[in-house]
Amino acid sequence: MNQYKIVLLLAVFSFLSFSSFHKYYIGVTQVEYVKKQQSVQIISRVFIDDLEKALRFNYDEDITLDEDNETNSINRYLEQYINDNLLISVNKQPRIFQFIGKEYDGDIMRFYVEIPEVKTINSFKVSNTMLFEVCPTQQNIIKTKINAKQKSMILTIDNTSALLNFN
Image (cartoon, rainbow, N blue to C red; front, side, top):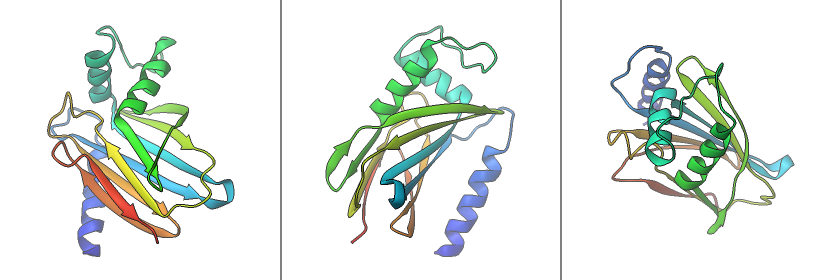
């Protein structure tokens, strides 16, 4: 099973390194619980062209994601999209994110969010429907590091959420 995860992760990262047209639809979300800071820190990576298509579909047909020519509304739309499509419950309680920011990296966008004031995690539920409305074959890989345990899962349009226990 460990070899399968390693091969899968290597394949995903090699796919994410391409900077031209892509025929696959993959996003990677890393979730880490930092006990000292009592926060859940989340980094997501998605293809810019797919994200742009989703933002256009949901909010404004004229949106263009371009680091050098960006409007002030992009962060607002992005934050709304994240809040609508990345849902997290800690210990069976829905939690709200704080949008930290984003950065462009070639054809990938990374965005950063945080859930503050998390004292302990016994259960962690994640639902990630990002890009499903514009890319039905999208796969959202979730990698967690919580309470010194690492777990991974793949979410699809048919399986949009997972519940992890850390007791």
